[in-house]
Amino acid sequence: MAHAEIAAAAGEFRIELIQQSDYRFEARFEDSGVPVLLTDEVAPLGGKAGPSPVRLLAVAVANCLAASLLFAMRKFKNDPGRLRAVATVHMVRNPQNRLRVGRIGVDLHLGTHASGITMLDRIVPAPITLWLDFAQWREWGRGRIPGK
Image (cartoon, rainbow, N blue to C red):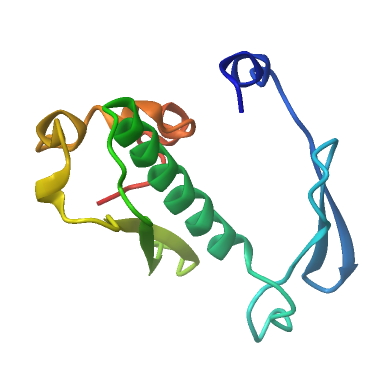
C-alpha cells in the first residue's frame, strides 16, 4: 500500500454483524473485498463454528503488534525474516463472577537472528516504545486492555 493510500485510509469504516443462529454471526466487511467471516462462541453458549470475539480480539492485537514491528524493522532497512506472533489471553472473573479478558500477552519472534539487525536498540528498546507508536489501536487500547 502506497503512502498516499495509507493516508487516505484515515476516517471510518463499517463492519456489519448478522445473527445466523444463537451466538453465530456473519461478519461482513464493507467495501473491502474480504469474504464473510463466521464467528461463534465456544460451548456451551455456541457451537464453535468460527472464532469467538475474544479470539478475534487476540488475533487483532497480535497482528497489529507484529505489523508494527515489521514496519519499524523495515524503517531501518532490516529484513526480520518470517515474523511469528503468539498471543496468550488470560481470562479472569470480575467481582460479579463474569468472565472477562484480564490480559493479552503477545510474544513476537523474528525469523532471523537479532545480531543481524541494525539499530535494534532503537527498534526494540527496553521498554519497547518506538514500534508501539506505529500500532493503530495503541491510543485507543491504552488503559483499556492490560498488556504484557
